[in-house]
Amino acid sequence: PRAYDLLSQEVIDEFEVDFKHTCAAAILKRFVLEGGCHSVTREEVDVAVKVSEARLNHLLDLVEEDFTEECPELPELTQSEWDLLLNAPCFDMKLEVPAGPEKPSNARGADDDED
Image (cartoon, rainbow, N blue to C red; front, side, top):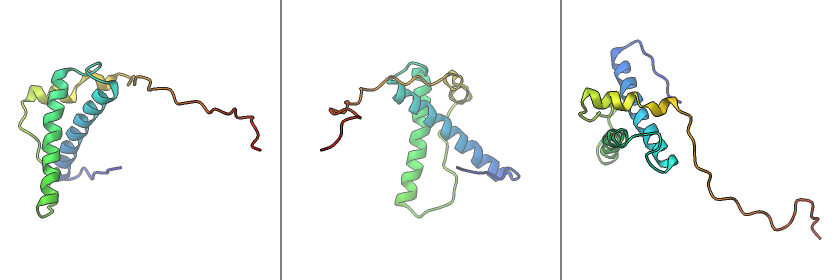
């Protein structure tokens, strides 16, 4: 879990960036779990990919370069793209995950005694 002391503008800015990254990740997770564009639109997925790529590039820079405590950069998105991402209707919907393949049943019954 993450915690923020929202008394300074710097920490508020860090929270906002983290919140936007989390929204992008949630849209991509929903896309994967649902097996495609069911409750998310292609446009929402495209914006989420842009945001997630920027975060991954930042993390890659941290690994390859000297570590800094800087907040990861957000990609240059229009206000309508941010609105699309942050107000995605899927956040108001229950996640319906398709049933996976059934687990194989045990060949022996639960009441069978071992010899």
